[in-house]
Length: 87
Image 1 (cartoon, rainbow, N blue to C red):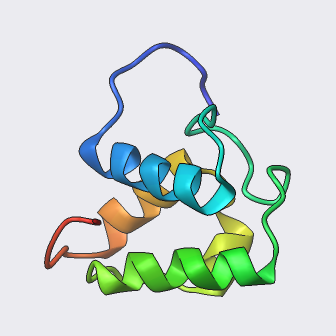
Image 2: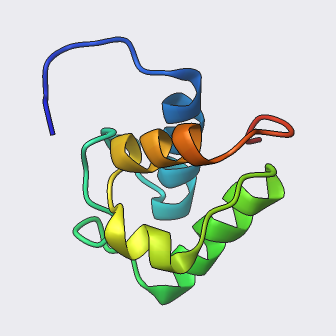
């Protein structure tokens, strides 16, 4: 991924908040790898559940292929019509 400075999208910011809560860490970027941060099957289920609750089509399989927030946000943007924002 490109690491140039750019403004994060609203979706990226929402996902970043979820990740910070799931991992109980303050310093996570949209380029950090889910599994390198300590992501496991329970955290994956938790994340996918929260993303689905927001009305987005996203699966565990997607998470294994798209392991950073930037990639996930791009996938969601290109493959979903949101019903609401992530809480």
